[in-house]
Amino acid sequence: MYRFKRIVVSITLGDQDEAKLRYTGMVSRLASTETVYFLHVIGSSDGKEETKNEYKGIQGVTGDAVHERMKELVAKYFEGSPETKQEYMIMEDAPLIHIDLLRKFKDMDIDLLVLGKIRSELTKRTIPAKIARKAPCSVLFIPEGMKPEFSNILVPIDFSEISRDALDIALSLASAANLDTVRCINIYDVPSGYHKSGKSYEQFAEIMKGHAETHFAKFIERINRRNITVSPVYKLGRSVCKAIDEYVREHYVDLLIIGGRGRRSGAVFVLGSVTEKLIDSTSMPLLAVKKKGEGMTVFEALMRL
Image (cartoon, rainbow, N blue to C red; front, side, top):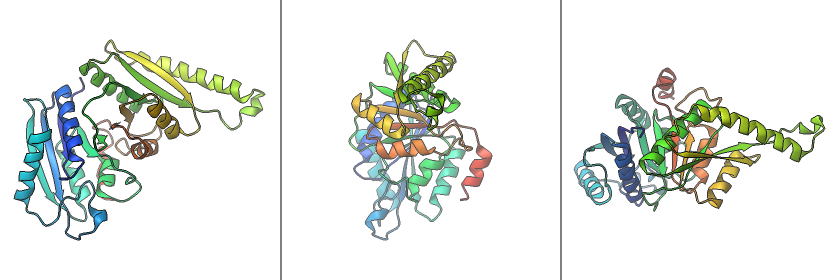
């Protein structure tokens, strides 16, 4: 399958670690990962509850104590490939820690970053939100309590290159997990001026669905399906996120894989607005796919923001 050769997983020494470690172990086995880096950032000792987020750990402890606790958690919950190397990274919090982390991820050629589910934090200027938005690699979000398994993958597509990348990784994961089907969903809408055509709303909706079906037929031609059935779903909806959320709930989707940016985004590694909203709203694991190696000049500039 697609090789997530180098994975970073955040360790907060909190309740979310079990799900993240178990899920990362599963991914590392499927992907034959070379190295998993377990990362913890020791937070400042200001004692404020709101600072205890994904990258702010327990307060007033030494690096040695954190290292030992991390090793205990990894030994208890992480079941990766025997060939996978394990490395530990402990950093002190600082005003520009997110820039240091982004630079490290780029220099280390990281393929995947694993975070706990950041509930409503992407609207804030928290460290994990900054990292998630600008990481130069794919990002996997794992809700607390999630089991390390999946059987029903859904890939939202807009027929762009980045959604093609997302589907390719979905098929790769499905093949490694011996699944026989991956579903794609395209959300289409009726333009506001449809009445000028003399057609009814329902008639124009059928026309838009027909366009989506035509685009999908061309889109799927360039995909290596690996003997897996790719089942398209077309859903009428004005709000892309709401339509996808409804489908996820109604059809028991347990892994959502989406391109990390929209069709018109200028920076490949910056999360698109639809992806951010889905990270916030969906209760399932979500993999935001970003294509490595593109947009690095812009990346260097963004690190300074």
